[in-house]
Length: 208
Image (cartoon, rainbow, N blue to C red; front, side, top):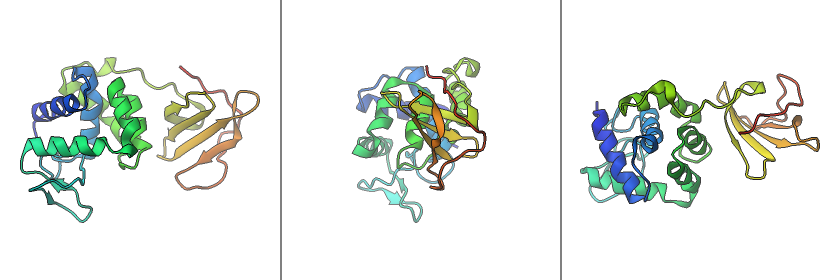
């Protein structure tokens, strides 16, 4: 297993390439993401904690999905950064800049990367411990919401909310005329079914 210090140094350099501070609080999110992905830690993808498929000279695919193993740490860092700089991951990089691991988890979960937000959140205490931070003083826990939603993201205009339900389904809600999120505007994107209404409504969602 790759020592946590090696993973920390990897991300110190990767964040530096992206122009992002590499203080412990900014490192919590990417290290938790790495723990959730398991690249390099739990497979043969050397120097590739996020399991990117970006090819570089000398890299080799370790599985049918094309996850790469890199011959040197510098190549793995460059490949990871190059992947993050793709247009599809602009929101992910924005949350790396912000340094909030919960917001990063939500952004990754909503991106094409494939790591679930819940998996990353579950690894935040471990990441904080690996960095010598108190896991109990982590970034604020998202406000519990009706419908058992967590990991919320709210649009800038406050009219759209996205959350991951405890069963892993991605839920998107739109605000109604009264300023509440109602049954008709609650959609389960994971199974692309119709309105989801296991708990009734309408509800007012706490916004911070």
